[in-house]
Length: 388
Ligand SMILES: Cc1ncc(COP(=O)(O)O)c(C=O)c1O
Image (cartoon, rainbow, N blue to C red; front, side):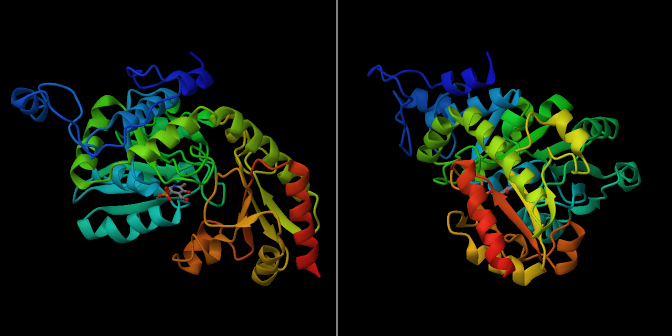
């Protein structure tokens, strides 16, 4: 079946009530027929629900759908995107291991890598943009390679086919945060990715309602992540899972429109004289345009740009938008503008921000589903006002 059909028709078993839309199972625990069933379930001799920190039918539906959409065997849902990224590290890395990671990663992933993993004896090196230099960084104890593409917020694109080969050659676990692309635009397993994580809070929900995350991969690897989540309590709530599973039904149509609007906005910004530089993977000015076209179906819903005049002008721009929201989220029906240097990436040093292209004048737009003329008008007016 095709992506859209899988996203709509993967559903938990219909109950005795013959409901059409998927039911929700908001229960913390499940009942046992008798002591023997209880014993067998706890002993893993039988499959079945015990307690919602372990498994829940609403959560399982979301997991099964995500695994199918990513083209892998299994998935495990988590309370947030950061819980997913954290679990993907913790389930496989131990003291003495070494991690390679792309430097342009989400702020909290950067914090885990630089502040928490070293506390537990896990060292790391950042991967340079030039992939030819990657091999020099592989050590005998290098276990995993983690990256984000396109990255938040600078929209760096990394060659997935090359990375897949590189990880295979060096026997590394290939771990990717696929949040910005979603499985509709990019399926990293096709390039050899072993672990694919998402902040489902973003495009998967797509309406700014709930937090959630997921890690997808082979049955054996996901079993390890599940074991960790089950014991440490990283689990997703049934309500959030139900919202997210329903949202997946419309992911393809939503992403098509987000991408269409984002490309039109990027093309508009390219011609605007208040704008220094526009970054969008499907603009041919993007340094990785060719690779982006090869590995992504469309360019995604985020556009980044540098406003002329730097920090002050950036602040005036944010204060001048009327339709677009100032909010920390992305991947909503509503267009959102943010200033990463003073918000999501504020905990990084100025140097660390510069290294990953987050300048003081960088503005990130999560392009929503409002009419594109209204989005462009708002941004155009704000650019004019902030230039005065
Ligand atoms: C690329 C990326 N990964 C992970 C996260 C974290 O997700 P959550 O806020 O659901 O924990 C975010 C949040 O913005 C993100 O953009």
